[in-house]
Length: 212
Image (cartoon, rainbow, N blue to C red; front, side, top):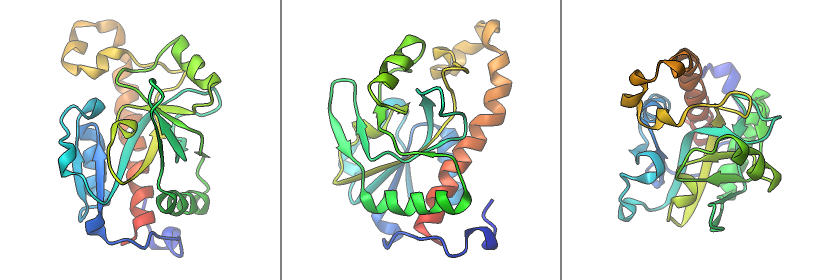
C-alpha cells in the first residue's frame, strides 16, 4: 500500500517518533501497527483498556484500529478521524489538532472515505437499536478504547468494520466461545477478509501522517 509515488508530498506531523505511543485493543490491530510503524511504541491494551497501566502513558497517545459504524451512510472501510470522543456517561475528550490535520491530509490525498463526526467509546459492543440511538445523538462510530484514555494529548485513527447493515455477534469479544455457536460461523469468513484490511488501512494512514 505504501508506494513512494502514492504517498509522496503528504503532510506529516512534526513530532519525534519517541513522543508517540499507539494504543490498540486487539492483536489484529497490534500486528497492523507493528508492520506500518515498526519504530513506534505500541501497547496492546486489551478491549476497553483492560490490560492498560495508565502510568506508562506520556506524550502523544493515538488509538489505531477498528470501529463499529453507527450511521447508515458510513460503510465498512470508512476512516474515522474524530474531533471529539465521548463515553456514554458524558465524559468527553477533544482530539489533538496536529494529528487530525496530518491524518486528514493523508486521507484527502488518497481519496479515502472519511468521517470527522464524534466517536463514542463504550465498554460493550453497540448493536441493534443502540446504534440508531447514538447516531441520532450525532455519533458516527464507536470504539472501546479512546474515550477511556488519560493522557495530555489523545487522538484516534479508526476504520469502520461492522455497520448497522452488518452486525457482529457480541460473542466475538470472547472468541473461544464462538465454536459452540455454529449460527455465527459464517461471520468468520467476512471478518477474516475485512478485519485485517481495515486494521491495515488505519495503521498505514497513521504511518503516512507520522512520516518515514
